[in-house]
Image (cartoon, rainbow, N blue to C red; front, top):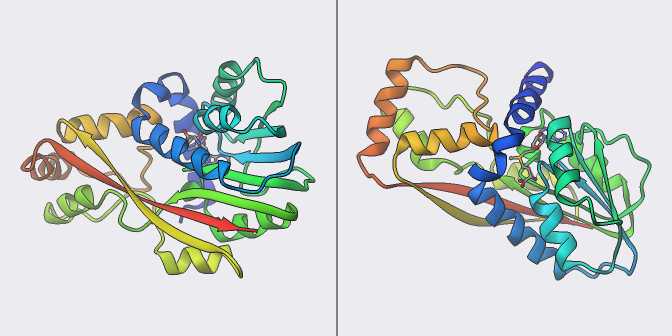
Length: 251
Ligand SMILES: C[S@@+](CC[C@H](N)C(=O)[O-])C[C@H]1O[C@@H](n2cnc3c(N)ncnc32)[C@H](O)[C@@H]1O
């Protein structure tokens, strides 16, 4: 979990990375496409009203709007204005889309929505459980919540290298399935699907995290420790990095 002050820092990192995000967001694009595929299996009504939280540059927005011609309105939102600007630019031609700068942890919208969706934003929220409860309250009767977030085994290979180098994990604390189920509440379902990203070496992996603005950590590592951990990760070059994706579904 992150504190309120950390949240501002997170938003700043993502805003600064918006221009180069797409070039580094390889696994994020795969996860967005997988989420969009899952959306097509949902029984959404014609003219469905959709809220997307943490849209970034619009990877999920674009993939979903292309697959869901019967959607009526799609409100894409993000806390970082530079991200919303890229999303608006990407999908300027789609009349169903509105883009807003908004803190998705406590959405300033009335609803109701037939669908609320989000890809890889929830793990950055200081109060993910509170956010999920608020999102569910914004659903119309029969509405659906579908969220991709990261679970406890995310970056397992990098965590192991850090531990072997004597460094504690310094990134966000990713929850286990039990915590996610509890946060999601009654009638919710949590499923796991691993996505593996291949990198030439540790440097390439860390550069890709920086490239999307996801390199925020509450505590900084000493350079000597960081180099030791990178050498350990490089022992198995090329490097595979696991994203432990959790699909959260509720209605
Ligand atoms: C890893 S990116 C994912 C973006 C996009 N959904 C994708 O899959 O490419 C995380 C996004 O969440 C946004 N974000 C982080 N905290 C947020 C918050 N409290 N409210 C709304 N968006 C937030 C960031 O600005 C960033 O655009």
